[in-house]
Every structure is written in C-alpha cells, then in structure tokens.
Image 1 (cartoon, rainbow, N blue to C red):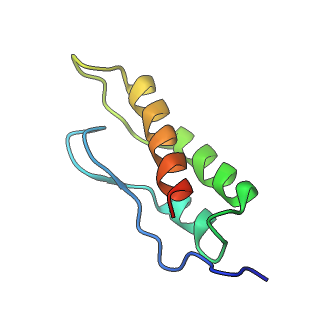
Image 2: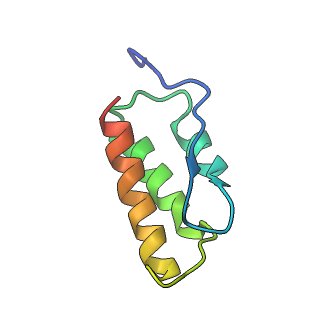
Image 3: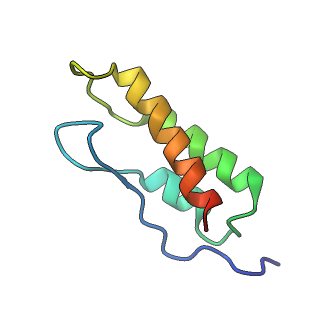
Length: 79
C-alpha cells in the first residue's frame, strides 16, 4: 500500500500549443500512486508522447514534448 498516494492530480502544460493542454492520461497514471513510484511516473511520462504540441520560432513540437516530459518528472520528484 502507498504511504502518501497522489490524489486528484491535475497536469496542465502552457506554452506548448496555442492554448493550455491538460494531460489527462498522465493524471490517470499518477492518481492513486505514491510520488516515489517510479513505474507510475514512467507511465505518466510515456503518456506525454501523444501530447499535441505546436512548433514555433522558439522550439519544434518534438522539443516542446520532450521538455514537457522533463518538467513532469521534475515536478513529481519535488512532491
């Protein structure tokens, strides 16, 4: 059993598209799991492969998607 499970996670990314993008698949992967559960975090990060990002003058869509994965990993690691 988890010591301190994540409940009601809400994950939203800004500046990856023309609007805020909610990552519901990542939320579902994390909800009910401890922040230290690496397999749940890996699944949440992997779910961002389908994140609909728009490239612009600053970064390509792939780069923004990759950075979103890094930000998610760091944010959950800080919990």
